[in-house]
Image 1 (cartoon, one colour):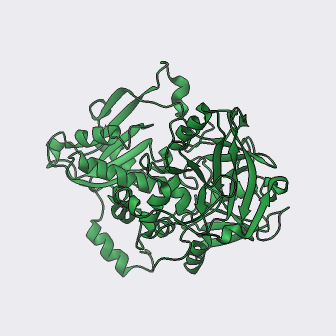
Image 2 (cartoon, helix red, strand yellow):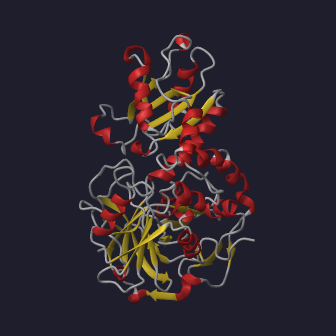
Image 3 (tube, one colour):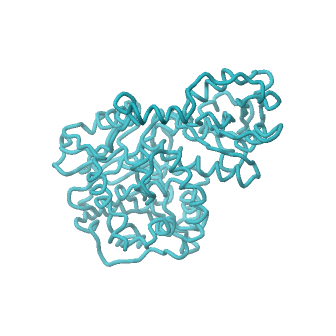
Length: 483
């Protein structure tokens, strides 16, 4: 049996507390301290999720939660996966799952309920004051306080019943307005444009806190026309329970923490940003973005903001992106007919896009180049790719030291680096400042860091204890060498 209100953050928090996966931090200021502590925390080995309480200027119990998806165990728990030993095991479990969840989504429409924990407190019209919640100023150069980072924005298609749930950044503008930055081409932006073309206000509900599965799924590429609520239901194997906003009629999780409900009126815009991007740069300065007039706020007692801001990797959510894109890349290689794939990793340092590595067991001449070109240009990887590396099966693709050792010792730069020119570029690429064409073209490098296929027999052996010997020694000397 599933849990009631399966997207209730507090159910998940209770599970994490049982596993000692959450650390409570008291007294950190919303002004830069919460952001800096979270940023430094995610770089620690074995770090925990952070729950900030007793935030200066706010009542005790008004909290901010960060680092929810940044470890194998926490990410596995969100995806309802079995307990895993590490990310390679999680990638293997995840292979094929997105396609299966999309196929099963139709069988899990959300279930409407009359009320839920999120309806405990309601501020309407003149009572709305967004500054009553401890929205952080995450970084020094940010354009304002961002209440929505680990959030989920609920919108609806004007011409159908399709409800979309997307993760878009939400900047507090004043007591009753937030900026909503939706990237061109994203499903929410497509729906928004239909309302603007018709001269009608665009209804919006912004979920500021819920089980992190909510923002995790609303931030990935769910196929057009499928509601993320259905997709989440397929993962949970039970429908999401939703209530409907009294102003817009839009659904949102009954177990949510805070929901902002309102409208974007035609022509309403305001400067928004700057804010960091997933690759770790401020790609653009302040620019105009649609302005949401918040008419109603629903929230629980002692509400929790889920924060997940972008920053220089590794950041709050880069690990989850790396795992999920690695599984998709693995499936893409296999689907393209590349044999002998052992492991794939989309590195956090490249925002899970710009530096990808696959290990293979070589079977024929040209095998490594075939793998590298598919890894670079398959649909999952084409957007904002940069470097694609192929290594032998003895190299762990997720271990940068091993990968760079293979590049340093198993390549001849003249022979083993291929270039693709006029590939898909993006204005979100920090290197776009160097683009010389009006079109968004960029280049790719494919590095064959495998031992030369025609010298597999006489290539120098590696001076290292065999995996079998390492395992035996670690078992015997576990007091010196922890497993």
